Image (cartoon, rainbow, N blue to C red; front, side, top):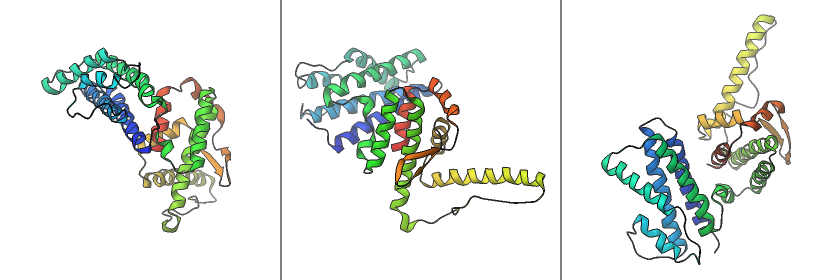
Length: 285
């Protein structure tokens, strides 16, 4: 059974809600307990979608733990995993939401792992797609963006982290370029195309002016992205993790790096799955 774009969008929303739970779980007590509600809601939405996708039931008001039996009947010998762990999560959610019983840090971490295992195990069983592969990339119209992102993922899987980081940066830049081109007729250059340049014959003053010009250029650079509605905190994080690249409009793969590679090669030791998920979310959000 193929997955259409409506199903894919709902899966992406489920994944997004789960990722919000992960972020919330890293907060200090008692704010970290809210993550349990997000984990539970993301799983319940997944179970509801699975029931619809498999035509497993027409009844309404299905209890949380009843989904396993209903869905398993449609899985042809396979079964949803993590049932006992999800029973514990459901109980913790009821205690928190209806009785105000907060969770300790170790319980929250345990439920985070259980939720991750639930999606990793069951998404492929029901929908035939790995949970880690769910992104908005398949909903993007620009084929260049799709190819560049998949190249980035291929480099990552080959453990060529340096090249993967370059291609993640390139994907983002091309996506922004495509967005700008669509509104070319309505575009107003807020800052113009030239860098902010001040000049003076005095060497001391010139040095200070150069620093000032550099600061103004950076402010302009950031503001241009904020105009697109990009989250500043996420943009700064993405910029720190990836090299700044510029490209040829006629050949996106013919790009140049504006910062030396050795700086980014150090990031290979620090690159994690969480950062990979951040890249996916940031680029296509």
